[in-house]
Amino acid sequence: MLEALDRQRAAFTAAMPEPLAIRGDRIARAIALLVDHREALAAAASADFGHRSTEQTLLTDILPSVSALKHARKHLKRWARGEGRATLFPLNLIGARSRVEYQPKGVIGIIAPWNFPIGMVMAPLAGVLAAGNRAMVKPSEFTPRVSALLAELIAQHFAAEEVAVITGGVETGTAFAGLPFDHLVFTGATGVGKHVMRAAAENLVPVTLELGGKSPTIISRSADLPRAAERIALGKLMNAGQICLAPDYLLVPREQEGEVIEAVGAAATRMYPTLLANPDYTAIINARHRDRLTAHLADALARGAEAVEINPAGEDFAAANANKLPLTILRNVDDGMSVMQEEIFGPILPVVPYDTIAGAIDYINARPRPLGLSWFGRDRAEEQQVLSRTVSGGVTINDVVFHVTMDDLPFGGIGPSGMGHYHGVEGFRSFSHARSVFRQSPLDVAALAGLKPPYGRMTLATLARELRK
Ligand code: NAD
Image (cartoon, rainbow, N blue to C red; front, top):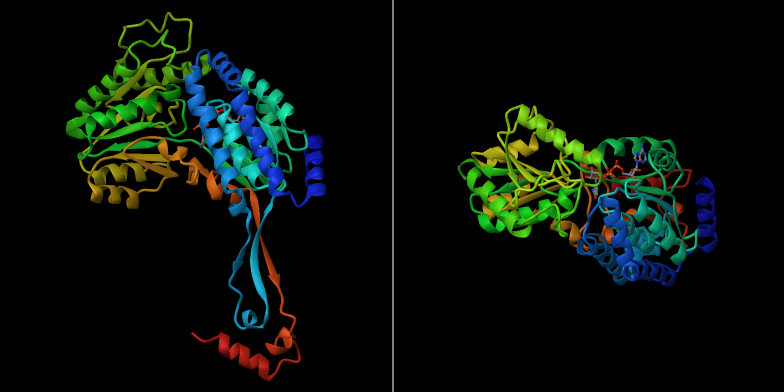
């Protein structure tokens, strides 16, 4: 791995400055890889998940990646342009100039999770390649077919000095995180993010951490409930809840709890009248994660939660030879339950009633800062109250998840849900070094400003001018 990194860095150094045309060409090759091989990638994802529809992979992995890459290609020239900055008086009057140049950092490491096994590799590449970097990618071991296919396709479309794929599990990931990259992007669990940051610290490698957490969704008393319920069901059940931004739990007006549960259940039933053989419904990635989710349910029920299972056709999941799970809505939950302590990452949806919106806000603020937050409603004053009184990575109003699909918005978490951003110009800047360039005046500045010993009248004049309140 170190050898691959050394080769990339040597190629990067030899090629400096990385022309915009080459960056654009790399982005075009990444787009071609995705568009030309979308069916094969979707088939690999389905095999890895046990089942995942081609439509879903196209909608949630291929399309967002292509969109991010095209956005980067379109704006690359503007993003890469350096900018003039203010020069201090009086140097500005005698020909000195200040500017910022955005320089590629060099070789960027990308560690990706399994839930969007193609998107979480290819979308970060948009900013990485646009900024003129080389990349080494470590995809997830939980999606071995996708990872192997990505390795093969990337090797076909890129020289090893441009983009290289390293496949492997935790051991490989650990060694990968310890490489002296110029920047490391990690998408994965908060707990693993700590290991990655620790390993990166050894070489002082800057990190972008795209982590998870418990993203709340608030339903306001002013919400259009049927529409909110449908959007929540859609967002929660896409990829069977295995989305970093999926609504982890709902905060609902106490008197509407029953109505909300009914409406979410009805919307889920309309979209997925059956589940086990339904090609649109994604399986849980593996038995280990399925068992993790059923253990959450068992723990919640043992501690007094009430489960509303949305299983419209009454199918027998326990007897099925698959890792699919139905949506289970939980009420009467409390902090003692594991489902209210850990990120759920599956089709379980706890409902937490609130009396006042201030109470809902306090509930959120008493917990770790989430990656996403959603609020449904029409009351603009309440919307403002929620926006200004909470902190989260991003927010979607009147829907869930959607802010991540806006290519021009920065995407990232805060605190335990992550640090740094990618997407849009913020992504470009994360993977660039903002290099300060100052051009000095041809005049004898030090003498004019009294900076040169022996200090005297000019020195005192400068100090007297600058050190006024
Ligand atoms: P994970 O953290 O278990 O694994 C992610 C990647 O890290 C894998 O490639 C894995 O091999 C590697 N890895 C594991 N241990 C490592 C170590 N010690 N050092 C270096 N690398 C290591 O996460 P996962 O289960 O694949 O994905 C689910 C998590 O990812 C959820 O928490 C979810 O919220 C989060 N996620 C976040 C985003 C986001 O954009 N913020 C997007 C998707 C998923």
